[in-house]
Image 1 (cartoon, helix red, strand yellow):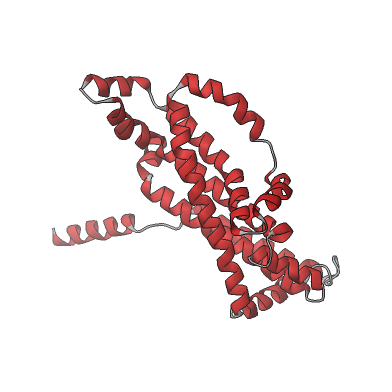
Image 2 (cartoon, helix red, strand yellow):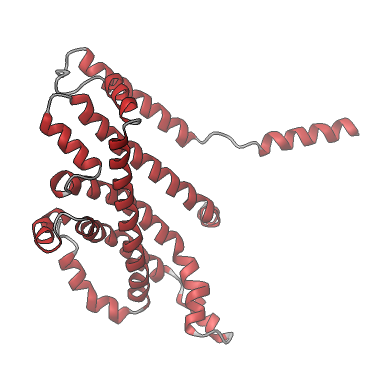
Length: 273
């Protein structure tokens, strides 16, 4: 009997042991294949190494730059702009999206104005914002917020409108005020949509930050670092090391937000499955 119990416990422990996700394995395989291509293409002479150095040379240069205070400061400046832009956009988009999602009238009245403003490329606003704000952190933040507020806003609207109105009516029938029903039913139900909007916006924000830094960001940030290296033009691996660092930051940010989203909203994944 004791042997059976021990075997049962062992089987339970094996079953409880977390398995490596197939997505993780496929992701690793994809990265390895991409790395092999980036190493082989310049080595084989398919592309001149003066334009595309081997990945090993870029990684070696990145390793050197990671102990360079100027490079680390540029990375910090980019992350700071990204964080502030995401925070401001989230604070604006979630309350506004909740309001628009709860009111059909407000949603219909504002939809035309939103559709008019949303397609404007953030980069097209650079000349105007430089005139008003100069090449400052505020200018970069304004562009980032304008770019990333939309995915958070529309995901919030979709999440709020997706809530069954009968649940809100049922809550009110149990003597809950409308604000209590919104806080206890609407917002928790719409939260996974909001989180998805934030995750999508995080990648857009990083792209916009680096692009603005390259074009008109002054002398701070990874974009400015890449632009300076490009202007000198004699150290191509340095250019690609900054580009690679941007990709690494994007991967880390997306992985962290995705992990938090999966952990916090695991109940929603179980419901979907």
